[in-house]
Amino acid sequence: MHGVTVMNRHAVDNPILRERYRIRILELDFGQKFEDLGKVTMWKLFRMFLFSFRLLFALISLRPQIVYFTIVPTGKIFYRDAVFGMLVKLFNNKIIFHLHGKGIREDAQKSGFKKWLYRKLFKGSNVICLSNLLKQDIADVHTGAIYVLPNGIANKYNGQMILKDEQPTILYLSNLLKNKGIQVFLNSLLKLHEKHIPFRAKIVGEAYDLSYQEAKDFAEANGLNGLIEIPGPKFGLEKDLILGQSDIFVLPSFNECFPLSILEAMQAGLPVVSTNVGGIPDMIEHGKQGLLSRPNDVDDLTEKIQQLLENATLRKCLGENARHKFENCYTIEIFNHGLAGIFEEINRQ
Image (cartoon, rainbow, N blue to C red; front, side, top):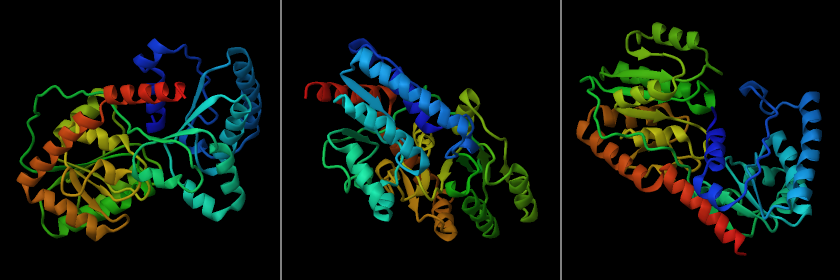
């Protein structure tokens, strides 16, 4: 399940909002599979046409005080969401756009039309960004209110420590996508092995750009068999157990906003090695909750992982800091109160 889907569900299930407001939900679901995202088909266009009538009927019949809309800010899907957003604005509703993606600034710089469309859509609206760094992405096309609300997840930690092996385990918990840095990660493991640094690694996620067989072939060709485990995607208790058995979390993405997998790692008390992109530097302060490397830089990533593999005291310190920051900033309760507070402030305007 994608992070935006998880956070949409949290927003819908927010007990504070449900107590204070009567909520009507119109679900947008035009692409059922990951590989369908961004594709335009006749079936999707037909469903978009039908959804437009459902939206108009809801706006006319319910006359909502606030419309909360998680839009896709870039790509072809943005144009669909812009149509729906403009329909809402026709009725002078208070509208909240919750941005779980980025790329607005880059798209606006490339296309004058798109810059105009962004400005038209966001004019007079309220926008929620996931971190202070991500506010920069919309600064050129929106002059109104921008709220910052980090994602949050349920706190599952029960205070019990899982017995771990003496040999540190590195965890990659994400889909096997090139832009998630899976190939950089594998090459980094190879360099660590060539330096004779002991480790174990687990790659947990769905195969996409890179197949399981390709990952296993890489391990076999480079003498990494027995060091890398690829169990596929894991969910619920199985995923929690893997997090608890790990020592270092690595997500070397090229492009991110505010990944939930990092929150899961922080919750489990793991030091995080990631990249200085998107909102990640707001989540992980370099040297405090983890270490940040340059994206698509195998040597830099290897160096950061090596620091943690060779220094158990540093691993423990950064992991404890990550856990504390999670408790203070990123629980679902903090998210629920934050979102409800934004709604209340906008409703009073």
